[in-house]
Length: 286
Image (cartoon, rainbow, N blue to C red):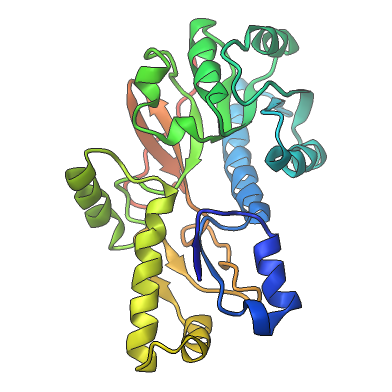
């Protein structure tokens, strides 16, 4: 069972705690929730460094904006704990509904707080409301984090062309994560008339299975497990290896994913900066 979609850590814990039963499961996309947080903080650190330089401030001010949902609870707690250690000031936490169509109250309060970064954890349509209304208010703060709606090609139009500078975690863009990434993204766009999202790495899962069957010379599950455990697979989304829990081994430039920012109607990739094809991250005019 090659998992392409769920991030919960429990899936890997099952393998560790009851190997004989769960050893047939491997994570392909995305990385586990704890590692998604590692990526979020790595990019946040990079944006924070840019703000320190550009705005000549020692401790960038961060507003946490997370939809009220079970999946954001651990991330909110991690942000509240880690940001001060990263020399950033948490000015407050706001939690609208995942389906909120108006976030005026939250954004007004964030504006008053003097926040320079809005750290988002949004999977629902509220992500569109946040992007549109931050633009309408000409907010000086820049949005970074998870915004699932912001990963979609339709986001700019849905946000009435006002989601300038909104940035989010993503998986695919025309950048050289591996030699296979750009050809895959172009072929996907050609065939489906839109860009792939993270679960398009289901393609990698199928290729991992194919490689394992060919190497083992068998389709027997018990013979495939040790082959995948030792495999290093160069896929379309990244380069995959697995730990004892059959979770992806997290590494920047390999499995940590990418970050993108909406600039003038285009989704522009900006992190990790040393990957070929990445472009500069932009800030709103101060």
